[in-house]
Length: 81
Image (cartoon, rainbow, N blue to C red; front, side, top):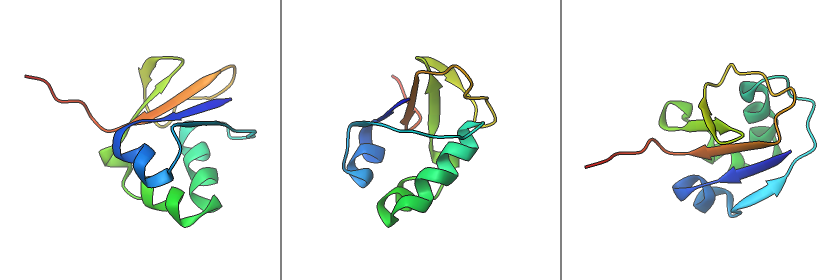
């Protein structure tokens, strides 16, 4: 699946996106797998309350299943004005 990182998440990880082979069942499981890779991933996912996730470009939550998902995007909460 394609994993996309935006804003400070991208800055901490050092990649805008990557293809990930995973057996993760949920977004939480994917975060755990990514965090275990390297310190830069652990730093990016240290506080999931500061993150939002979209699955195939639809906002979702961290308990959402990944079955059939092609793209996961991580980004900080958006503010508007």
